[in-house]
Image (cartoon, rainbow, N blue to C red; front, side):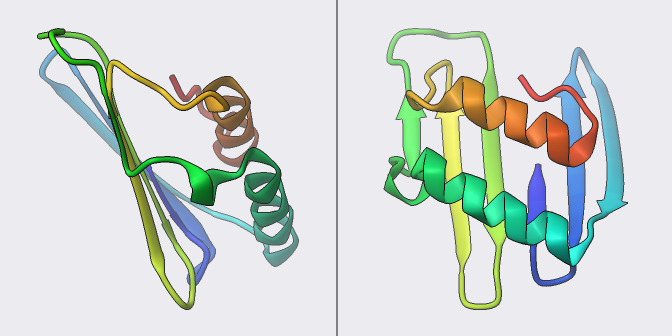
Length: 101
């Protein structure tokens, strides 16, 4: 999932069982502004860069990249998630109208 706040669009990449799906969606300026405020509440900038569960060979890998005018924020996980993950997934579902995690 890439959320491009510079160009006001989201790009959804989903890989599972050998199938791949990609879609893009435009977002409004007001939606982007509200999204940024929600990310502040979730303290996304305080998340670690990587969440990895050692010793698990299969499962769920996730990545999020958020592009703003001044920076690119990347977070990644392998069978491990930040504490605010459920709230973040709900926020992504609201933004993209797609199930995330």
